[in-house]
Image 1 (cartoon, rainbow, N blue to C red):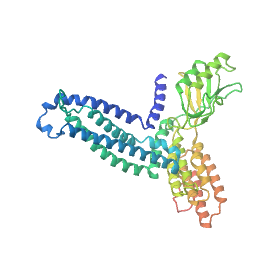
Image 2 (image 1 turned 90 degrees about the vertical axis):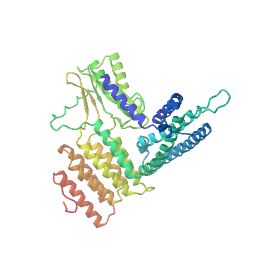
Image 3 (image 1 turned 120 degrees about the vertical axis):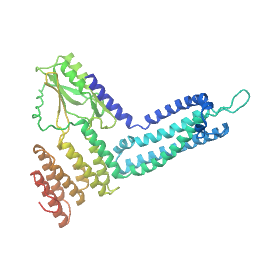
Image 4 (image 1 turned 180 degrees about the horizontal axis):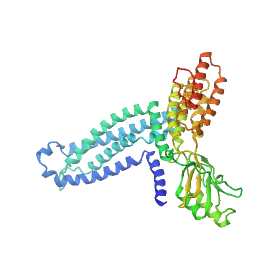
Length: 456
């Protein structure tokens, strides 16, 4: 349990660090200081003994030239670093206003940006640190020019120039909507595979959750914010220690309000808890729920789909008016939903050492994911027949991937899509096209795949 708890906590820390711009540049600065202090000392020990075949490739100027080179590197790199930060901020603003504020986490997770900033700041710091060791021959002070150190500074400066060019090319690629959706789709797939295990077709039917009695004690949220993580080991340990059943109604991604119910608990033997035992149990259960000011993908399987849907909805807004992007985003949603359909959905049950269900954790089912991906694009894109057509295609594609017990979720969305289409002022050809697409969904639910253009 301790190992599982440690892994769960580390996943949150890792996700938080990956979305910050400062950790990798800070490490680069620290390494640069260490190298800038240590390498000149090595220079002092070996410079006089280096063979000519090596020194021909090293810096050969005097102290004044070394200072000029190092000063030029330091001054230029701090300017380039400022430019890089400025371009990054502009990109973040563009992503927020043009596509979705929830895409900012995807941009700030970009390792290329982290490495570029680390390279620039490390080169600047290294050049300044080496500059302090260059000495001219004055009085009792001996001339000292750290050839290897200055040469390395020159190499780092050339690398930074190449890094700047690559960064600009990378940035131009990253601000394209196709790239952003691809990155979000990749992160969403990783989160789904991490949070939702693959369904085993040979697995026995899922046990039914225990029936909660009317006398069950209510578990309250300890803080307000987004539900970002649950410590499953702590929940199971608390339930076993108190010989209780625990059922949570909320799942990661939900918005919690301090003091409102998130679940219930009751003694496995029936009846009610002793007052002290109840207080102790509820305190432990509340402390196993972690909240944050924003959603993360650590345990939230629907966060990536939420981001893709936001892009589609933003593209359909009157200020943007880009239905092509919305159709593109719905294609990513379709692929993600088909993947989710094959995962183990529904409540997650934690068992004790005797294989008895002790804790039931709420998780979205396929209907929740479909609603997340389809409802808002259908509402905001109802006047565009191409958007409705892509939603129909999404349902058709998904109908081929679902199990029989999941088909009613698609049938419900199909009924709502048809009602939306009937309420619009489309021409006859558009209505015929949408009718053909929705009929194909029905055929798919019946196990028959009808190629596009061949009717239903």
